[in-house]
Length: 209
Image 1 (cartoon, rainbow, N blue to C red):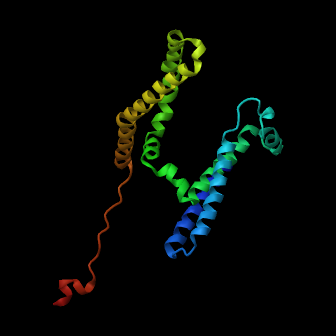
Image 2: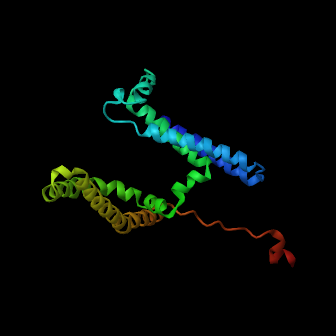
Image 3: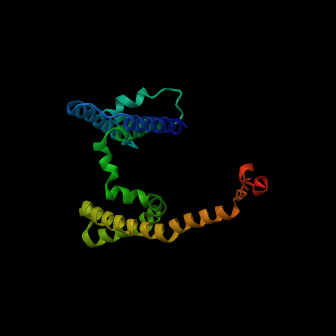
């Protein structure tokens, strides 16, 4: 719920920031821009660190052994507290710095964002079927003593297959579903009745006689 309201706040700040940029020309120097860019990069790295919270042995992990006890006692889901802050820091820093935005505005990131929903749907099935099977096969062919090589081989095959299936799913299921939903909405929604405009009295021919 906190992230939900924080998203509202950040969206509002982004709208106000965009409106402010459009209303006046920035006179800030290159030194000032460089300074704030460094600040936002530091914030971004802090967010990445917080989002990378270990799943196991957090209390015995470097730095995390100091951070975890700082979680307030009234927080029920303690393991999502710092990752939530990390997500907010990442969104805030990238929305303010053009250099960081390049990480998400390039063609590769835009494409991954386009198929992100399809990736979410198909990745689990592919990992639990093809991924685990390939790992066992690679162990038998290459040898379990080379686990890193086996894992890289399996991960490469799974990533390529997952992206391909996500693209196919997006084209055959996702996009047609959205189009069908819009078509169905148009058929079910009540159409606004046409308003009949009354001609003004001065245009009525009978009044001119």
